Structure formats: C-alpha cells, structure tokens
Image 1 (cartoon, helix red, strand yellow):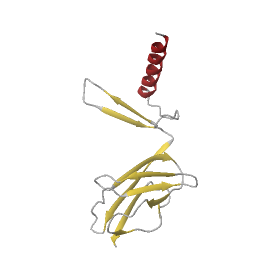
Image 2 (cartoon, one colour; image 1 turned 90 degrees about the vertical axis):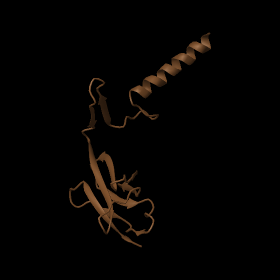
Image 3 (cartoon, rainbow, N blue to C red; image 1 turned 30 degrees about the vertical axis):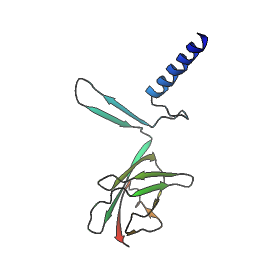
Image 4 (cartoon, rainbow, N blue to C red; image 1 turned 120 degrees about the vertical axis):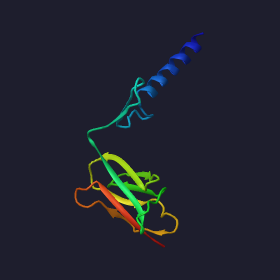
Length: 131
C-alpha cells in the first residue's frame, strides 16, 4: 500500500511538471500558449528577453528550399532548425551576433562556410546556387 501511494505521488508530480511546461532540466521554452475553448483563438507570447531570428533559404529562382538544416551559432552554442515548406527557419534566442551555417548542404546545392545577419537585422535570406 505504501509503495502504491509513493508511486501515485511521483506520477502526480510528473504530470504537474509536464502541465507547467518545464523540461527535464527545469527550464521552460520561453513561450506561453493560451487556447480558449469557447472560441477558436490561440495566442502565443514570446519571452520579452528573446528575439526572433528568421533565415529564409531559396534557390536562384527564388523558390523555397524546404528541409534545409540550418543553425545559428554564437561563441559558445549552436542552435539548429529545419526550414519549413516556405524555406523559413525561425529561432527565438537572446540578442547576440550569430553565424549562420548549414548542418548539411541541401542536396544539389553549394553552400558557403558561413553567413551573417547584416547590421542589426534579424532576417536573412540565403540564395543557394546549384552545385
């Protein structure tokens, strides 16, 4: 009986952590999503200390390259993402100077070693040439 009670308490704690959005290391993902059941409205709020960086990957005909695996790197960490069907990869990160690179070159395209955001811009479009 005592083991069952301990097991149930542990399960309740895990469900509570999952419900409040904490990860295994105790961090939250920095976003809050509110969904109203009486109306079909969903609101997402970004953590005010983070900035959204957008990388768009297109070919020479300005067509999106979906599935391109890009990453933003600062001096200490790299943050990977995959471009969606519109060729867009987004990152919600602290303000910093980031180098943009490809984890692997999209099939059939040549990539440079690194790309950079211009000035204080948080948007970058990378046009890839056929290999």
